[in-house]
Image (cartoon, rainbow, N blue to C red; front, side, top):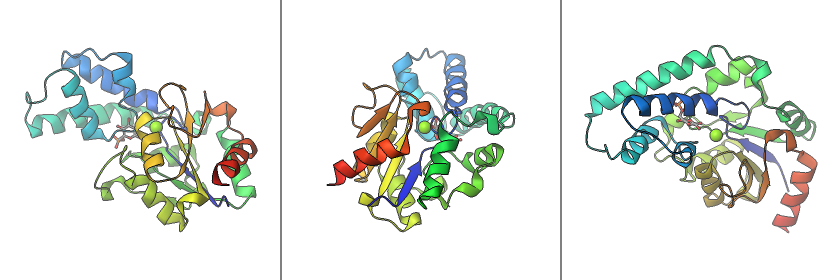
Length: 222
Ligand code: BG6
Ligand code: MG
């Protein structure tokens, strides 16, 4: 029986994913690396340092910089991202999300955030939806990032639920992989090709309908 929902944040509740990807793309260019659209998309859901390392790998520059230089690059990217976050308002909540959260509340579903972002509390505060959630996984406590299931397992634990009692929402390929590895029902938001592993896929958040998703979930859990 469905008892809880777990949400990724960037690209699911709000469109901040574009700020992450934009800032990474700028940094990559500064380093002389031209990322393909698929390479850029593969950064979704990946932690700050893992994203930087992946970019350097795409540019065959894995061993070019010291850890200190890499910290500087990551800090520079984060500065740019935080600047964008500072301009966010509740209007930046993606279409369909406010209704989805309200529907979940009216069904007494518990809700948690499983975001790799250390900026998640800041973003949720800007969007004025911090209080909607019963738990937020602190990414600093994680040993492994998405696609490892750890973050989704932790979110489920925070809610005190079993894997067959939750539905998790993601826009990232690595995130959908993490949800499936945690044994949970995955809703993918985005491309059918990239998110093929998800149990239910919508092209964008405006198509999210809790009743329909729940029907698919109940069939899956039968
Ligand atoms: C994820 C984003 O939510 O958080 C990634 O999808 C980002 O793009 C990651 O790299 C880490 O975010 P932050 O804010 O800690 O750098
Ligand atoms: Mg995301």
